[in-house]
Image (cartoon, rainbow, N blue to C red):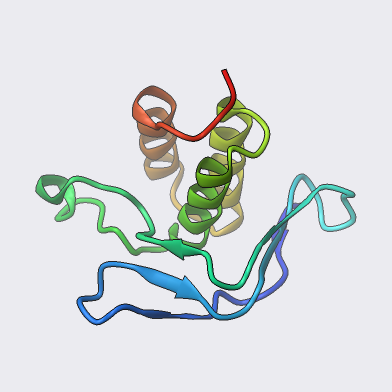
Length: 121
């Protein structure tokens, strides 16, 4: 099973809108013994889930899916792999975090349709 192997450690900026990692953050894709892992480096800055303010009463920016959102932000910002793969890893990681399936599916479908990353065309 996939796994986050390190805690999410960082600090918020003064107005609590961005979080910057102060330690590397590692996620193994597919299974813990997988050769594929993502290392989000110290210094990476995230806003967690980029949810419009009008919907944050339903899905706040920070929730059970927070670690998956940081991972997804990193994949998008660096253009790692493909958009489709980044979106799938987001869905997988939310499953690891035991995000309810209906929330996982809603968030996955939203990023699949509206997410924009720095991927090569």
